[in-house]
Amino acid sequence: MITQTSLPWRLTRLGVGLILFGIGVALFVIGDLGLAPWDIFHQGLAEQTWLTFGTAMILVGVVLLILLVALREPLGIGTLANVLVIGLVVDATIDIGGSPTNSIVRVLCTLLGPIVVALGSGFYIGARLGPGPRDGLMTALDRRGIAIWKARTLVEGAALACGLVMGGTIGWGTVWFLVSIGPAVQFFLHRLDTQTNRESS
Image (cartoon, rainbow, N blue to C red; front, side, top):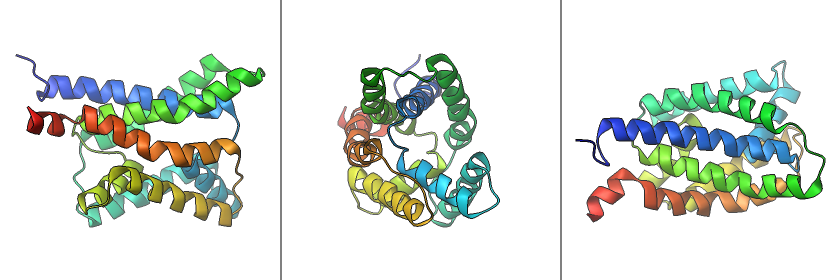
């Protein structure tokens, strides 16, 4: 029997969540009205070193994984799947969406991007199969008593500050992502976390 806390159901939630997460990231990129804070950090790091944008993302992910191990944050199959799946979904969605020139479409993509990312986060983190390297910082702070929305905003703000110092670029979409992602993730995670649902039943 498949229940909300059974492994097949949690794996399904993981897959759905990562796909939605990737689509949300791609929508934000397609909107092209400002990079997300972490991408500004990756851009700044690439500009200050010999790294490409992609290799900067990978290197940061590896460093964060080491940090999460040091913080004793529980990792799992979701952590590895995060690294492997989201990038593929982002590329596929961008290929389909292209580079729209219509301003209304771009604004809608930018506005919806963080919300879809947050919905995906609720599904995949709520499956309790391990957070991705960047989301792991948020969950580590949450386990230490900092509310999810505050933790996510702090993490994104720190990434943005570092990226700006290293020469990354900002747009109004960046500000929208920064202020919306934390509350949106908390909203969806509270409703989609299998542990929360089990405790409240």
